[in-house]
Amino acid sequence: MTRPAPPPDRDVLDSLAALESRYPAANPASRAKERDALTAPMRAWLARSPFFVLSSAAAGGLDCSPRGDAPGEAFAILDDTRLAIPDRRGNNRIDTLRNLVADSRVGLVFLVPGIEETLRVRGRATLSIAAELLARFCLEGELPACVIVVKIDAVWVQNYRAVRRAGLWSTAAHVDAATLPDARALSTPSDRPIV
Image 1 (tube, helix red, strand yellow):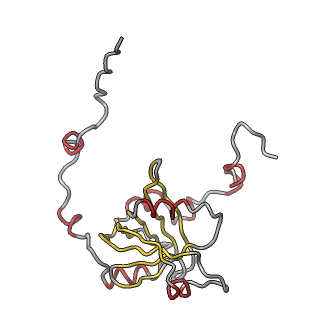
Image 2 (cartoon, rainbow, N blue to C red):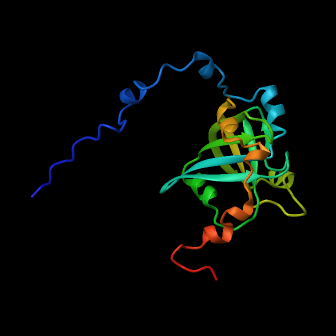
């Protein structure tokens, strides 16, 4: 006996037409700000960025990896269309690297402390072990295991609203670490006591 299909959920937007009917047309200026290469102001802005989030496509979904270091150490601008990101040795899960071997598409969001705008990059990544790239990112005598080279397909500034609304840089919005579970607690299954 075959069960009948459930009725469509009227509260779900399941087509582009349904989605687009809920929004006015995008302001042409918001599309015009997208570039296929870095401009001089973008390069100057990125030179001050110590932190970004790298998104990649995983077999089971999507993955986002926070990356940070001192400006100039977290990543480098190779030219107007390429960025280089050292993969420092860490927990050796290499989730992002596995993802990039299978699917080279990446998205990045760069932040500068105290600045409400973000810079977004969409592109394709390759993993390099070129000696000159590894040497460029030598830190305290240790070379990265590899360098992620991102070929930029699109880059644009994201307006300030999200960061401003979140109060990200406002000290009044800072949370006392003692009021939140620490990394150990977050990593422990809830059905097991923390030892």
